[in-house]
Amino acid sequence: MIQETDTLGKDSELASTLAQRKPVIAYVPKMTPEQIENDLKSSPLRFTRKRLMLLMAEDRLSGEELRVAAEFVRKAASFDPVFTLVGNEEAAFIQQNHADLERVRKILASAESAYFDKRATDLTRNHPLAIQVHLESGVANGVLVVRSPKKCAELLRKLLTNDCEFAIEHDEGCTILREKISQCPFRVVTDDPTLTNSFWNFYLQ
Image (tube, rainbow, N blue to C red; front, side, top):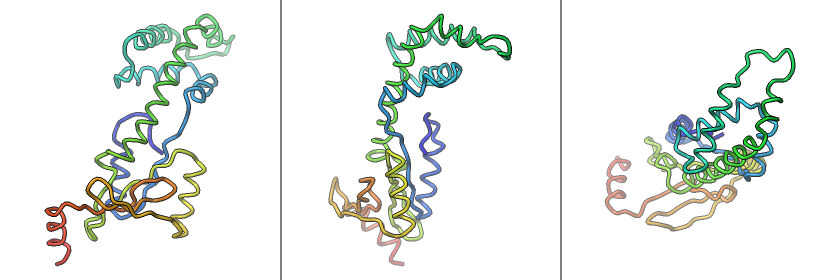
């Protein structure tokens, strides 16, 4: 399950697993801004504040959105009760700042949805760690990206039962064995003559 921030932790995990010739399924949620916004409504205030701070730290907000988010984070920073045994201070704070909270939820939901889509595209098409060579065999292995729990379960079942389906394609200077559920490269062979010559010089020994 791909993490919500770019710390490269999951990236290094999937890369090292691919390099051991083991298949990797990367689940990246496919969520609309409306779905994320609904989830935020049932989340604690501190979660919204924390996510806004992370978006700001990663420069994923700018202009008016950044100003609105920063102002709300400043307000929320002054509200951090250790105990809520008497009354409901969080509900009172939300009621007093309802309009601002609704606005930052929309900003946060839009940014999170765009991030998940970008993350999936990067892993599928241009991430430098998404294809790794198994050094013992020389086989280039690719990560399989899925966007729903249903497809994740279906792909996992096919991998475990050795029942995956593939299509052979030629694209952008390489031959690709593309897995049908994820539509991701599972195996890749380059057409570059220099790389091909270097490869066989090593693996024919």
